[in-house]
Image 1 (cartoon, one colour):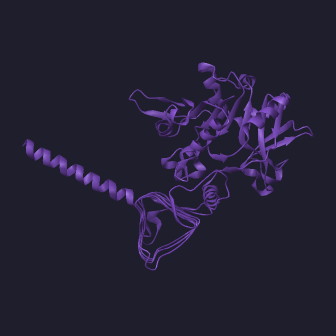
Image 2 (image 1 turned 45 degrees about the horizontal axis):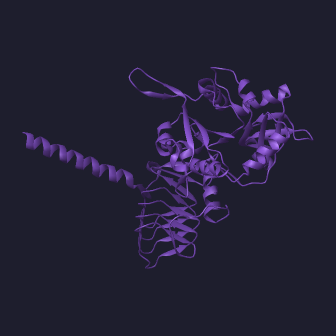
Image 3 (image 1 turned 180 degrees about the horizontal axis):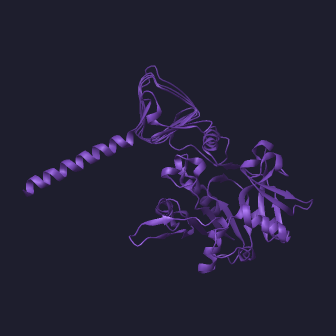
Amino acid sequence: MKAMILAAGKGTRVRPLTYDLPKPMIPVLGKPVMAYLIEHLRKHGVTEIMVNVSHLHEKIEEYFGEGEQYGVQIGYSFEGYTKEDGEVVAVPIGSAGGMKKIQEFGGFFDDTTIVLCGDALIDLDLKAALAEHRRKGAMASVITKEVPWDKVSSYGVVVTDQNGRITQFQEKPKQEDALSNFISTGIYLFEPEVIDLIPSGVEFDIGSQLFPLLAEKGMPFYAQGRPFNWLDIGSVSDYWEVLQNVLTGEVNHMDVPGIQIEPGLWTGLNTSIDWRGTTIKGPVYIGSGVKIEAGATIIGPTWIGHGSHICEGAEVVRSVLFEYTRVLNDVTLHEMIVFKDYSIDRAGEMKHSSEYGSSEWLNARDRRRSRRKEQAEETVKAIEKVNA
């Protein structure tokens, strides 16, 4: 079995994280989501993986390379073009269109292929899913989950007959129009013949176009309702909930990094915690090089990225702070994600640091870059003085 990871989307619902990161690079316990997918594939013996990329593609390619560190082979298919001046322009062509491009280029899909969206954590038994797929003689299989009816509008809805054959597929219908509350998890099994049905040279989507086509044509198209953990990072609020679940130990085989210095508290290397009047209630992870001043309060589940600084009297509650975040004196962050110059609350409301009446937190990266720029300018001036 081969694999395809869908990684070309812009991740608009996870902004501002995706202003600077492609969605598959969003970190969970300090590691990109896509890394967990690759490790899971390798665990089940899948070693040939294609990835379609577009938005901020270089960050994915530079991090994962050709996959040797994971014991797999990774290939990339860039969706976009290069201008005459060398500027690279990202132009996604749809999840199915991306697969068609790969097939026409080199014929990669010559065996059953597991297709995964690059923005979810899973522990699906891939071998069992493959066995059911083959037992039914399926051309395509979709792994499904039952969700509350008020959530169906966020997903592709699957309608099946009594044998599990998919008769209709609705892409993100309104709740009142949904014919089922069983949804696609973005995990598919395809035979090569499926790729033949995708038109060439046009943008084409798996959920909104390919699946309705398979159902309409009456192809051997089946749903599998398997028991497994599926943590989808569809939105910023989803991401906050995923981190909360992971830190509380609700996800198997995902351990908090660092050293556990007391129950519920993990730290990276060279952290500095002034315990005078400080309260820390786990689960809390404090990254390497973090400084916690006296009188701070940190309530878990909370993740504090490396290089951050929590000032005296600050209170951080059930929050996720990306690296180099400085929380100022007596400021309270409650169920927040802080990423560079942005904060996002649990409901997904985003604010830029300039929108706050007074400074509450700072992006310490800017300070580092300013110092480096000043140092560079001083060095240039010194060289010019010597040369003069």
